[in-house]
Image (tube, rainbow, N blue to C red):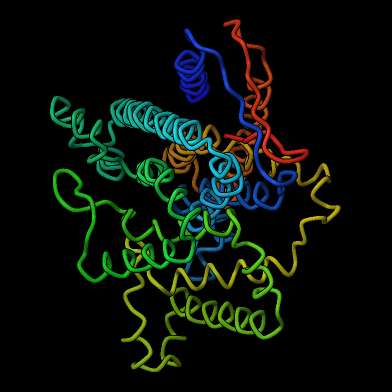
Length: 413
């Protein structure tokens, strides 16, 4: 089902872009693709899959169990960085309309993926609940209301107000992608002031509780007014702020502070898993820290992610020979095809959950479904890569816009 949805999505995109007009391929970016970004996204994809499988032993190996941040921060920052790196030079060269069109087309792809994934997941859950006479699945994944009143809930799903469990992140990306052209325009003209305005919006959204509404009540799980700051910061780094950040991050004092913050976060998180350790944490510190809010991107999560990136810059140089290793190829491939891998992973995580509930739930079963799931994720990434290489049936003229020497083509997952 996931492969069918992906193929249909790519067909719709091809028809929209190629029917009745020449195709424009924008070549942008100052250098070759940074495989560190693909590697981190691939690691994030595997961690998201494991985290979405409840009561899975292997999700103890994801970073959410050892620090304040998790894979979400990785995806949001890298998405912003990739946009700044790839689209910045083209927009700077006067191709703003073409760049905005591509970004809004991408937002449209994400919207179609969200709706198809929502319907496929609901169908999967409803069929499982009926087949095994177990209504727990409908309540656990927030689809009971949809099945009771589909006439209302379909409209709310189209408005992105209703979302089943695990489908909160794509709506966030849709909003961020729609705003990306305006962010690029501001960063190209007043980069520091635009970043400051983004920070002001972040703190204002947290203080005044600005968010988008959900149905039937509540607000978005990922507040776009807060998470936009990490996204804008990523664009700022990819657009030209990267060298400044890299110089500061690679300095010895900053690295020491970042490492110390990661150790502190690790010790605090250990008190969540071993409650008896909580008595060693001063009450004043507990009152100052908690609650650590994911919805509004708590500053503790934000600073933990920044500290993690600082350390990774130290240990992962861009020219590391291991990036070309066949052992890392599955991770990098999943990072390069993140949209189909994510969509397939959501459906796969529910299937894994069903197996652990209905068939066997021991540690051996948990490890087997996790490993098999990751193998299937790599398989869908490989299929998606092969599909992208197939020739199109619509014969259209291709216009190439090259910005800079040896510039790579803009890569879209």
